[in-house]
Length: 432
Image (cartoon, rainbow, N blue to C red):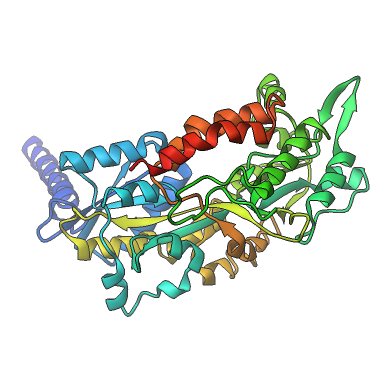
């Protein structure tokens, strides 16, 4: 009897052991299985984003058993340097996630594989189904190096409908302008005992005021040779942004924000800011609001009716060092495909780069807040990308942002600030 039980017990253990081996070593989803190609994907992202990415891959791999995808997460702040270090060290990923600004850094290092032949020879893939603006950003000299997953105009003005109702102020619409914004912001700013307890408006997207006034950051986005922030139209746009803080006092200063010790999105959620301009990525946090109703409007036009916004966006590229480009191409299609884009759209995390999805029930026609997110599909045609230069990020961090801190705090005028830094920016643009 004891022998029989022992025999049964050992048999069960053997079955479990064999099952484990099959799960980890025999299945086609294992990187160790015969004829399975391993594709490593470098990316960054929050836990929610990574979950969607992994879910998209898991769903795709059900029908692609001969490819194993390994997601390799890196922090956003270290992403460029670590990926370039891995390329130099001979241990790069096969596919990388990149956004529209860091794309310039990788392109400058000749890191990307040309995806145009894959696109031309794949009858199941249609690049014309994506927003042409973000495709153009990822295209150099007629060659496409990245397949877009999302686009992200800085065109969102989120507004607290309850505060508007309380003050009997009309909601913003997509055809408003700077002066409509100022008028509403004045009515929605509240001061008690000499202290502002509610602000009418805030944005970090100072570029929008420059673009919507017909100004620019550089002479040529694709091949910048000089900074144009001293152009009269650029200075006037920047000056209006500064006046919202220091003259009209409808926007909090950096000092006020620092003293409050809280983020702008949290102030909006607490009813301390009536409107704030940012990007659609704020939505998952805003959907946690239970105390008031809210929506979004397109960033206002300038005084002469010009629209203009900065923008983000991202996608997937194959590195030149990839040993299995055909398999990597299939993975790129999966990562930038409908399954993932729909999941990101439903979560409110990202505007789909695929126009059909962006115009459909998961985005433009979705009843989820914000109800007016469809306006972003129109906003895409008015975006301006950051200058395509690997040193632009450095110029921004070293010169533009520190000087703008002085401008927004009222210690310098826009003209004074730009006079100081433009020679330095021009020098760094020429440094390759």
